[in-house]
Length: 296
Image (cartoon, rainbow, N blue to C red; front, side, top):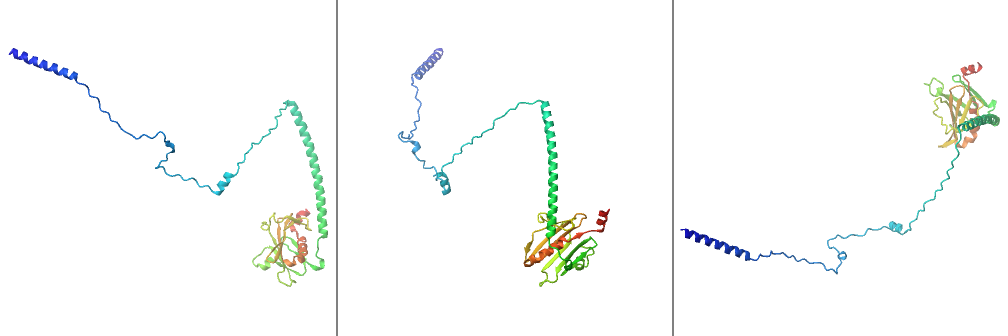
């Protein structure tokens, strides 16, 4: 029994030794490699010169004639300007006492100059006033006056309006035209001897709200016989065969203002112009209360 066990162990040891030697004598296998073949470009061919078939075509931009003309014109060179700066002058600083003395002398000199200037302006104003008065008197002396035998007088008590007009003219109170009107608003003058009715019509109305006055239109002063009135005239304007000759009068003593408009057929303007101006020049506004205040 013991001998059988010993033989069995000896056989197992021999088998183990023989197998271990055999495994050591085996040559290790080399791992397999995968070789990939790829077409390489020819080094003689430049890749940047080869066109890409998949690249979209780029069309050149269209150039118009104006753009082409601008491109052909030579560009103007802008030369920078040389700016000459004035030299900086540094003055010596002055003491406060000298500055006060100079300011006092300057103020005294300025005061003397102002006095001389005011005196000169007063003399000039007096001379201008005298020349203006002489001009007004000359214009009044040369102005046309309707003879006493050929004129009618008009006096109105509400506002103290007075004037004269040719005898062949007819005066109509505005209250006679509008029966509902109670207060005096103005008068209408017409030439009754004209061949065509409406050849000359003159409207004289009160305009205390200055509705008809515009300083840009009434630029020329019109000399009045009554020095308490100031009048301006507007350049004649022709429309639809009639010429409008307009005046505007201010009252220095009262608040009354008069708007005057003469409508004349354009071919007869020269015939009526002197008579219209004579009527305007003869206007006076003398209220009883204004006369009383002047007498006090």
